[in-house]
Length: 126
Image: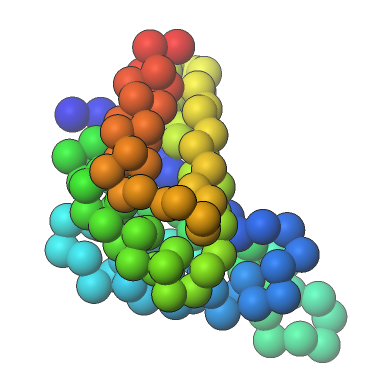
C-alpha cells in the first residue's frame, strides 16, 4: 500500500497550539500502528532555543486510519482543539493533497475515519 504524508495543524493563533501538538505527538507515539511521527517547527529566532511548533507530520498507510481517528477522537475530547489534516500522496514528480478538518463539537471518529480514507483515495487518484 502506498505511503501517505499527513500533516496535522491546530488553528492559527490558538494560544496553546504548541503544547497541544506536543501532547498529540506523544499520544500518537504510543500507538503501535502509527509510525513516523515528527514535529515540524519554525526556524529558531536569534537568542531562542527553538522555533514555534507549527504541525505534526505523520507517514502512514491507510491501514492505520482507524488508529489515527481513535487517537484524534480522544485527544480532541480532552484538549478541545479542532485540527486540520492534510493528506498528501506523491505521483511521480507531482503530489496531490486533500484537506480534512476535525471540529470539537460533534466529532465522530468513525465518520472522520471514513472521510480520511476517502480523502486518501482521492489523493491517490490525482
